[in-house]
Image 1 (cartoon, helix red, strand yellow):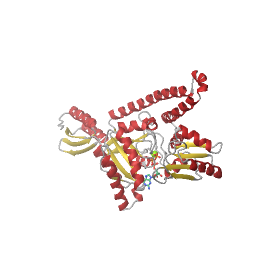
Image 2 (cartoon, helix red, strand yellow; image 1 turned 45 degrees about the horizontal axis):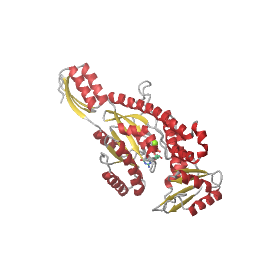
Image 3 (cartoon, rainbow, N blue to C red; image 1 turned 180 degrees about the vertical axis):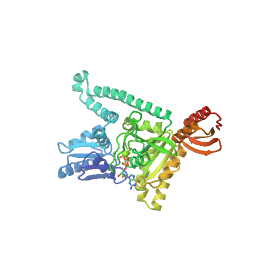
Image 4 (cartoon, rainbow, N blue to C red; image 1 turned 45 degrees about the vertical axis):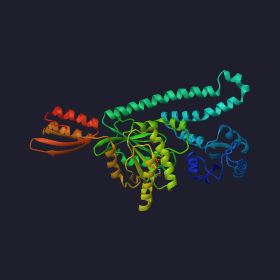
Length: 428
Ligand SMILES: Nc1nc2c(ncn2[C@@H]2O[C@H](COP(=O)(O)OP(=O)(O)OP(=O)(O)O)[C@@H](O)[C@H]2O)c(=O)[nH]1
Ligand SMILES: [Mg+2]
């Protein structure tokens, strides 16, 4: 049974129902209320009793509450509900999705850390109330245990994120640009990643060098389909790029909880450019709210330029597309983020992808140089290196090859060194 309250509007339960489904619940009904928060039950007392009745009538096992219940509200509401009913608020629900779906060590550590951070204040409250048990607690209390476990998990996660940071630095040194795909859950990030990524059949990750590159990012019409970051290679105008798909964002989660998913935030912080993916087929209110949630995270973490990707435009006519682009530009105008022109795409049918690729290349830090190298076997090897690392345009003369080259600044520098070594180089 879904329950929701909103002070200003009749609550919209679409998202909480989808979150409940993602956590494995089968929603049998809902009860909503428009009123200010009640201190005791969150819902008004009368509504809280109604909730107990509908739960009993529907024989529901659980109540999913759209919002945060204070520890006190949680306890009081639970006593009203039929015995044995499980009560889950919005945060608990999101945690359940992550705990159930976390596969890798990093994802499991993050999910467990977030759960403990959520539970700590609740344990503290319970412990404060049971002063009688204090003597027992001196030996070790649930609060102390949780605090110790949080410290241990933080240390473990630091190790994992440090390793990820080292890996990113290695990739950067190899000449890769790092691009992060960020955005609200279900916006189409993983679908877009599959579009941008080089075909794995053509460029398989070599066993030793790219063991960290995932084979696939699954895309599903389910909230929180992606529960950990995955990285794939892409080639844009000859530039070698690593695109990382991140965990989706959702509104109204406490900062601590979001912070626990540091792998996603780190990828956003380290990226040379961020693609902020937006589901343009959502109605304008939702589109704006979801983008605001995304912008909050980007403003805190992104350092590179942000390209808004207005996705799913295959579902819109021209007017709808223009309206979505205008709404996106409007939300971003107020934000604290270095944003570029929004690009309309359909990750599903591929429309707009070429424009997105060139917008991305433009946003990546770049440099250009011209070289003239003697036309020799060594020059051919140099040219193929250039083609692999950037955008090279060669003009063959009688005994020299003139090359215009564009790419990542560090790669252009390396190209200069190689051209110098070949002799007769005129960089600019
Ligand atoms: N019509 C349409 N559907 C799309 C498009 N892009 C993605 N979708 C669908 O939207 C749903 C969500 O796509 P995902 O790629 O899984 O979205 P995500 O942002 O990775 O979602 P999470 O991993 O849950 O955060 C899937 O059913 C996709 O097929 C698009 O351009 N057009
Ligand atoms: Mg995904």
